[in-house]
Length: 127
Image 1: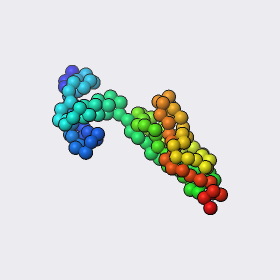
Image 2: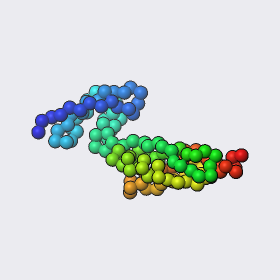
Image 3: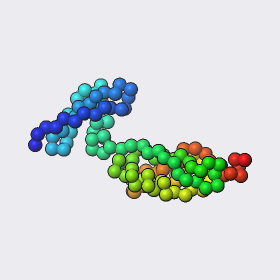
Image 4: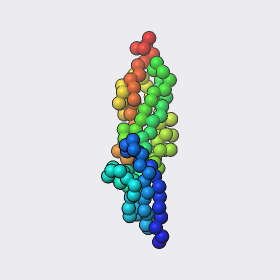
């Protein structure tokens, strides 16, 4: 099989190195134009198992606000993002909630939780 070149920008530090990956038979053979070894690690992670942090808002009842911001506890594989967002948007949470409260645990067996990112009081507490 022919050698393929794939370009990506490393986001692990402010340098933003423009990486070039040499791919053969679906495997990375070399990573070029990196300034540090974090670039190599980033390229491998992004090529084989791309992940992203997910942030969203979930519905909450009896709170001083109608929605509460939530995020994943760590980056989740991209293939799970749509299903995760659907699950978050179906949530019906109840105030009060404290920052860091898991509202979804171990999503799809990934070991990744969805947690709140702020405190939210009930209407009575907030008045």
